[in-house]
Length: 101
Image (tube, rainbow, N blue to C red; front, side, top):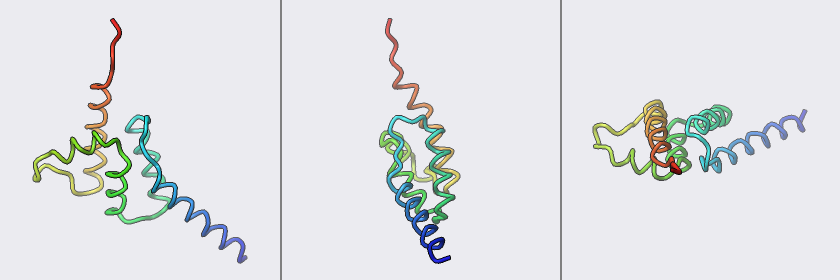
């Protein structure tokens, strides 16, 4: 019984560590967001911390573009951040496509 509780506590700590270090790197933005939100649900952290981690772990150029929005248009809620990150991230992907002619 005690070992089950300890194992569950270890899994929670592993999930917390995983979400803190989970970065976008070269993942497509929608794939990253799906995995990230699954980790956030597993950890059961508050929405403000999830927003903080999104800002920290998403591609820095995407976050810079969003933070350049006028204050009235800037996202404030988690759902707004997800939609905005997805939209900007998909646009950012297309600006980095290189064509060899």
